[in-house]
Image (cartoon, rainbow, N blue to C red; front, side, top):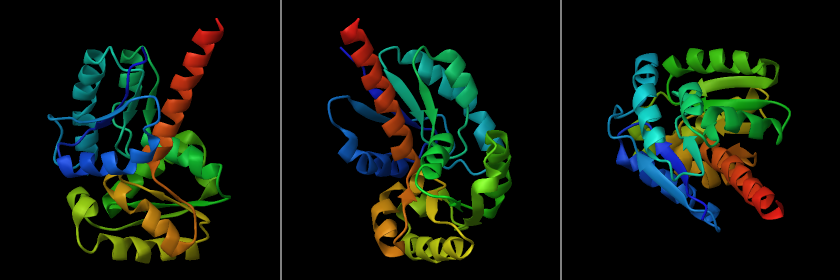
Length: 221
């Protein structure tokens, strides 16, 4: 029996996990998807310190879930991704990496909606390591907290404003640069008339592909 794809919210804000549950509802088709909250995590991952501090607890959680068929680290900074890959015996997907790769398949140049200005240098370092900065139109920040992005009253209006600015920068596909923005993806795509990538959905799609391919290989063997 195939175990679930375990989607880990590395912060301790349950509202973010609830948003992930909502965003992933359409993906529940044969392979289980379980969204969990890292209790040891900060309320929002908003600094390099936060990114580094959750790496070991994430790896411990991954190690404890021997039943999982794949993991998704649902934070746009991909905290602990290398460590979790070294720990797990199954595929582990980071949402920034997965979101960017999906965006490259949907458009020529992508723009990123960051949670705050302070996040942008960290994201740019990651994009340089991926070797994709020549496809980046720009990254602009909402300048909200993770909690505000998940349930703030003015979040959608601010997303529209920043989205239009990124389109003016030359982006023809947008990436939501925080898991807390997940619940706004469909409405934002309709408003902007551009593809909008929720990176957690992108990572879960890749995880499901890996799991289903593994099932196919076992069946044919």
